[in-house]
View 1 (cartoon, helix red, strand yellow):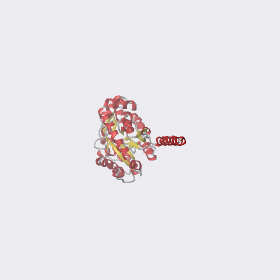
View 2 (cartoon, helix red, strand yellow; view 1 turned 90 degrees about the horizontal axis):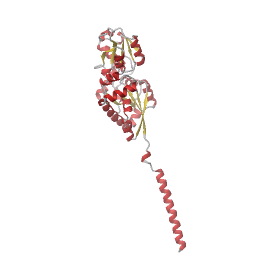
View 3 (cartoon, helix red, strand yellow; view 1 turned 120 degrees about the horizontal axis):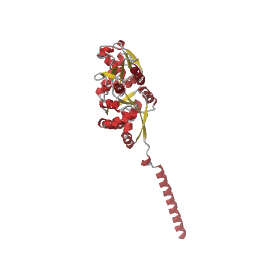
View 4 (cartoon, one colour; view 1 turned 45 degrees about the vertical axis):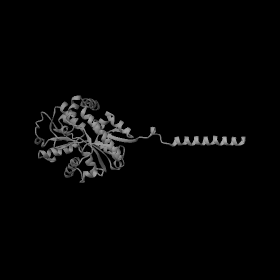
Length: 322
């Protein structure tokens, strides 16, 4: 009898040990909610653009993290560098102006528009010196005009000249980046400069410049968030969250000008009067791309094709997720 009790005891001990090991193994393999890995999302931006405002405001990263995403921001100097990074997969989203998406779609990049910002038409336009003697658009005939190829400035000058009854053959366009154009304009090496804020505001405040015409009715110069179709198709939830939270950040920017001016002044190392001029003549928003915005982009595509600036006629609507 005693022997049976011993055997039963041994069996109970072994069973308990087995259950303990099995339970331990279960706890080791069961996913831990506290250690759930976040999905990495990389956003390319340029200084002081809407994506950079979201980066500095800090709310987007927090909200995306709560949704399971780790946002990483990467700064680039220009749209060309952003597009190179997007093509190579080094970033998932890029903040661009209105012209680079058109040019890159025409060059075969299968990109898609994710979101669109507000028009920046009041801070985009043609700068001349106050004492230049250039007082009307017609006075631009025969003048040297600085611009940046493949940017909003290129479309803006085409539209501006057309409004004056002039063509590209009636002026001397000088392609240069914004830094070089600023120097050339200050020295008088060019007669006019087509650009956008904060370069426009800087020239007005610091270089005795006047805005001969802004881009109202000519070019919207919107911000866009774009991605590749291969990424966007697989990550629609990320795209929706991104635009939702960027929209909230842009609402903050619209309603907190003092904080925004202080922030951008430090970011760009420009005086507050310059940033104030920039901020107060534009608005901030980020929305899904509407039919009207597609039409605006199609106008750029059609004009560029007619001017021979892109070799392929494109339909901007093809760059939307179906």
